[in-house]
Image (tube, rainbow, N blue to C red):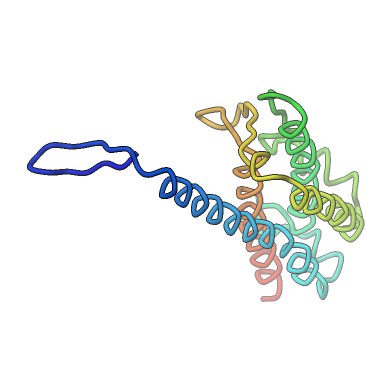
Length: 191
C-alpha cells in the first residue's frame, strides 16, 4: 500500500506486487544487517571484558570504589547472573508461545550479598560467564528471521512484550554499561 497526498486529500493506492515484494526484501535485508551487528556486539564482550581485568590484582577486583558501589568482582558476578538469565529467557522465547519470562535476582538485591560470594575468584566467575556467553552467541547464530520476532511476556518492561531480538540488543547495551563501570572502578583505585 502506498499513500499519496494530492490537493489536501490522502489517497491510498495498491502497489504493484513486484514493488511490494522489493520493499519486503529490503526490509528483511535491513533486519538481517542489524541482527548481524547485534551478534557482533554480543560476541565482542568475550574479548573486551577479559582485557579490562587482565592486569588487575585480585584484591583490587574485590575492592569497591566507594561505599555502596559494586567492586569489579561483583559487577562480573552480576554479568554472570545476567548471562544465566539470558540463556533461560532466549530459550523460553524460542520454545514456547509467548512465555512468561523470569529472571533470577531481577532487581539486583542479592547479587552482592548472595551470588558474588559463590565465586570468590573473579576469574572463575569470568570463565563461567564466558562459557554461557559463547553458548548464547552460538544460539543467536542459529535463529531464523522469524525467530527474532518471537516474544515473551517480561514483567520488567512497561509494555511487557519482549522479542528475542530486543533482548539480545539490550544485552549489548547492558554489557557496555557494566564494562565502563568496571573500568571506572579499577581506574579509581589506581589513584
